Length: 294
Image (cartoon, rainbow, N blue to C red):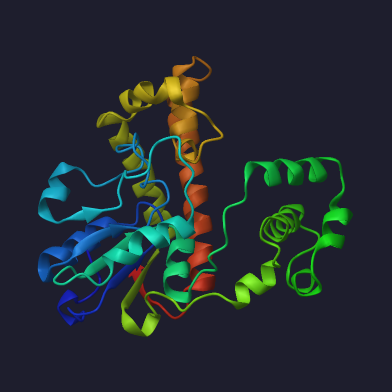
């Protein structure tokens, strides 16, 4: 599918492939792996969870037989996950002898952490989170702002309650301001000048047509059966259950909407998500090699 000369890609460098959903990232990764060798590593926040193979378009058994795939479905359904955890998972996979990494996905924050570094901030405990939620719900934003160090206050959007809460949680949890954590960000694992960084830039109409076809194909391949198998443990608060299509199919299985309505809602949600991805990539990946699609 690619609009790129694969033979021109340096075989000794890692390859990073970012792009919006349904743009053909996985196909390009597999094409490179088969032409040049390499291990395909997932950088998509939905595809890390078990339970959703069809609905998140994880590589199928045939693709997995053509090249080694890692970090797909390795996180339990009910677990939390983050860019920091992904970075720790991917670190030991980067410099293995004869195992050149081809990292592919649609989660921009993973790629940013990989190529720019990520502050290793400890996770917030449930006690601190509950305390923060209580303050925010009680309209005590000013109290949280007053507790922040001056450098953090100057760097964050104080009008954004969630940004304030995050900064307050970090400072309360660690005794160190969010700005200081960011200043101490370690060097990136894969600097941009040590890899081939590709970002797929898809035409909107072309991509929307692919999105519509793909969700129909997911239904044909068993997405509804997959949703039915997960219905008893479905919880909208779980990260795994925020996969596009999961809420819609769960609502259908509970008798709340028709399957046609679920299909339409999931397709619209996917288009909106792809638009946000394109905007994010164009703003933050200007130094990546852009591949125009189709």
